[in-house]
Length: 284
Length: 271
Ligand SMILES: Nc1ncnc2c1ncn2[C@@H]1O[C@H](COP(=O)(O)OP(=O)(O)O)[C@@H](O)[C@H]1O
Ligand SMILES: [Mg+2]
Image (cartoon, rainbow over all chains, first blue to last red; front, side, top):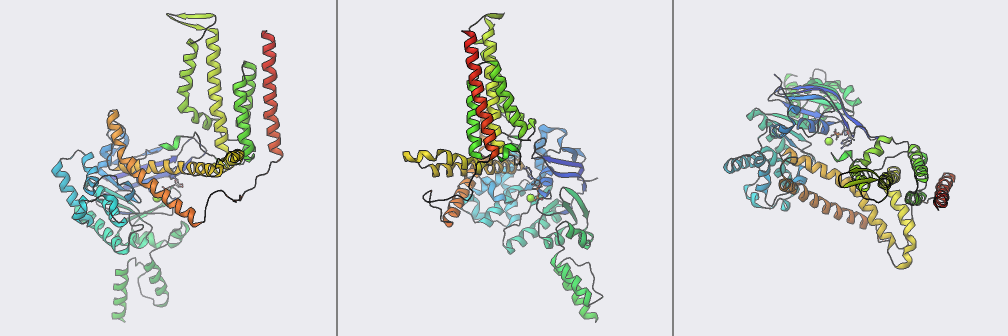
């Protein structure tokens, strides 16, 4: 059974006013438990809108969303339970910090869930380890931290709720390369080691290609593709028509293929490229 | 959730009303409002109402949008309307215990409700069809004579422009922060008043922080572009009164005179 199922989802912003805008158009998706999903599309294609639906922050104009086979909006009063199971890290999450100390801020989510004090502490330590946050920072004010540290604290605040499905909306935008790599590695580890589902929105095709099991491509509110990275990134013309590009290394390898026949045209990551080239050199 | 508020919003378009000179539009709306309050009899009230509806049709924005802008104020209209029914002298037509409903009461309540509704319609007419920049531009121009009294009209208008400019940004920001806290399980919808007020701390703190950051950024950006107040500043846009404007002025002034004449006629009849 699908962990998360989206059926005929349509969403219209400001319905009934002249500013009405159809942001999602009849989307159907089935996402399994323990999948790493990449969500891509150009700016304004509806990625954030879709993400907000999965977290029950927006109610579908039409269609429904099922979590473990149960309709999200079946019991609107219990909607918070959905949010405990589906965690969401927004774009620029550092703008949501508000508590006096980092510790209290990370504790906000878990205490909303009604956990006990010692459980909360455990979760906070787990989250800090996960995100590689220095324990010494826990008793500082979040407003004293650097931008990157604030981002980590905000992400820890969601991780501490230990959600079954974790959605991240462009979490690496504005991070330095090392922090970005670390964050992505940790996300991958969260998904692998704890059998969670992760949905990652990103404009970095290299990251998406490297980590995703399957990729959702949106354009202007329509679902264009939902398939494995190999198949998605082999449809270069279709990708270009919706304003996207394959990973840089894929383009490089394709250009090489024109002069050196015999290389694979399905290479998506630098590691794969290195291996393919080494093999090629050895067998020559 | 805040997206459903239409009151005070601007809907871009190119209708007759959209294209009027903003200075003329502001003045005309003031005269229209005057008309509403000068109409002391049904005939003039309905003529003014008719003209307001005519203008609304000319904006090509659906009536539904206008009525949406009234949703919040509708209960004020109902409340004052009902109060007025009971609160007047005159011939009793209906008695309900200690309350009596008089003909004058009913008249009063109709007038008060109609006036409130028209008030909202006319102000929506202005804000729906005038971009915030044009609106403040018009106001800056109209209050310029106050310069003579040592009032810094340019600074006033600049503050207004900035405030207006940032209302949508702030609303959007509030929406975003509410979403982010809800995603962390914040409970904004249930519980007693005290709990609900407490639930707003996680929204207000980030909002203040980001507002200060924005204000700082804006001040810096303005300084970088050498902004130093109103002295010797010229405008990029120069407004011209054209034929449409004169036509609209004639219609509204005609209405003004008509209302005065009808009022006098009624006064003469009742004497
Ligand atoms: N609050 C809103 N009100 C009206 N329209 C919106 C709102 N948020 C997003 N949209 C519109 O919906 C479309 C999808 O936006 P979004 O989901 O934010 O795209 P993405 O995250 O892919 O950049 C865009 O055209 C955007 O203008
Ligand atoms: Mg987005």
